[in-house]
Length: 391
Ligand code: LMR
Image: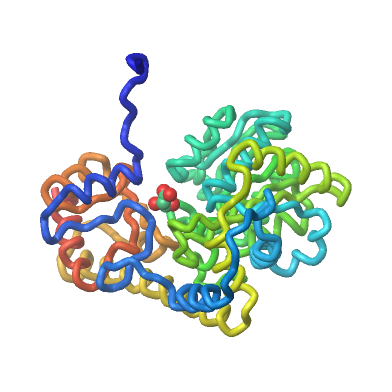
């Protein structure tokens, strides 16, 4: 029997969705998971994605296995989008694999690092996305934390011994919504170079930081153009709304085409032993959109629309708290922070009161997914936050 198996805790993010589903209060709000909702609170299937699916269906494509590293056309388009202007100069040294979304790319990264990288210490920002630690420790890496922000110097604070693995969020830092400025990225590059760190770049929100795909590639391009040894983990869950299709891309910048060939041979072995080869459907959709000029610009507008609605909800929430409800606190950070989340500063006790008394669900660290706010629930949310922060 399984008498030795202890009961595990619910997932800090998906566990919130489970609790939310069980609640039958009509005005309940789920601000836990980072999944986009439209202004009526419904999941949003991007029209560009719908078009791609209709067109793909007409092509009567088969369901044969993909190669172990996935759809080559998709990988080219995805990495070109992430490395921008630097892409052409690195393409012969870049190894990539279609991944089971961003988490799958992190899984490949951490397993590869754990097998071949000398240091097993990975430095993650405090705080970081809750699942980072699970993925890395499952692969046998030791989690260390760097303080993301130093209140004394008002600067970024990354303290790690030489040759460490450092995880950085390429854009739209999750959960804080606070990204380095370009000058700060340049500082990070200097530290990384001086200390010989390996950079693991997680890019789950390209397009959500600035509303512009190219502008969100600053960090990726900076490290790649300076030949920093790096892996990049991309996700199309948020920016194409392909959550459940699990579409992502892992890529590794190596030192030479010869090194790339050896790397790729081991990557294939790793994939084969893990899940054999990735699923076809989602990558076909993404590839179809990325390759089609008109559809791609339509998609860019749809992403701008999502990013724009999120910004307007930040504004609305702050305005109601400060102007209508006369909160004695400043809520400037709601509009200063970027991406899908706001790191509210609410403590675990206030978070618990929000779910118990107000049926508003968020992660214990006080993060709210702005994408779950809409014109019909923003006032109720503001009243609830005001109430738990008033005394
Ligand atoms: C989140 O942070 O809410 C999202 O990335 C969803 C997830 O997989 O946790």
